Image 1 (cartoon, rainbow, N blue to C red):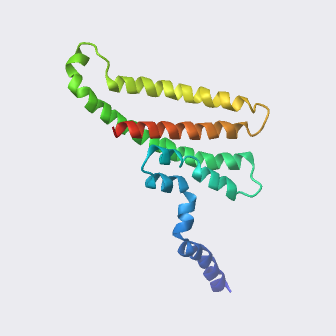
Image 2: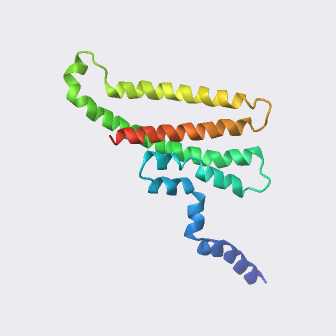
Length: 168
């Protein structure tokens, strides 16, 4: 009997992993798949929210926290894209500053400094923008979801902006 129980437990662990399909894995990260296939800025913008929306649709009788966790997964993905895009833009800004070294030495603006100022301002703006958005739902438990949706969208748009700018 013990042998049969161990075999059943092993099958429960191994069979789902062996029968998992690429379509299932793809469904879990629709945003990444869409983004990898996107060739234009408009196509990249169309990818925003795909994974989060799919996750939320698959929940049965979800609590607000369940829905927020779906969004958090995608927000984390976009924040990683934003960090990569910011680094790529920093490298591009350094390259763009080189031909102007003499002017910069005389006090002209550096693109790298402008990038730092822009990102600091954007971080503050994004927080205020999303807090403002959620205030329309002040008395609702879904207020958190509206703020999360805002963070997801604004982070994604900023990542796309920086990535596109770095490629110029």
